[in-house]
Length: 165
Image (tube, rainbow, N blue to C red):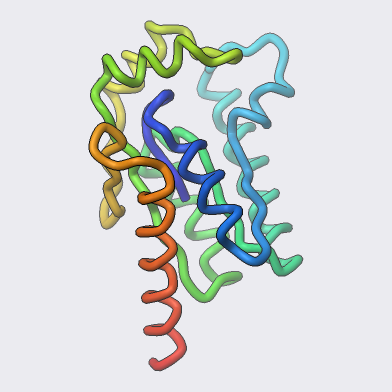
């Protein structure tokens, strides 16, 4: 699971990781949200988007794919719900908290075709609940390939621990 503010680099790292896995499904909240018109970024809309992402993740795992959930996951309850509903379908999981300063995130976000409104990015930045037990990746310090390799190594380490337990 990738979480962080818009423009932090979640999707870039998740994409780099997905090609390194033998079978993966990269499931993005942005893609689900793009199906909603008009987009209001309301609590109800977010609940719908995250429920759909969790359902897609469940189907991916049941079908034998590694599920890569990619979204803001602003609140701990969204992350906890996803993990609670999916953990029994996978030998292991990892939460990656992708971080960078708001200025860098705003610059990256401004260059996106589907840019999140600036005031929304700043509100998310102020209200983001730091995930407990996550691997933090600072994209102002590390590139996407290096981050994907580090996460892959961490997943392999967790998988070997699960197999030997």
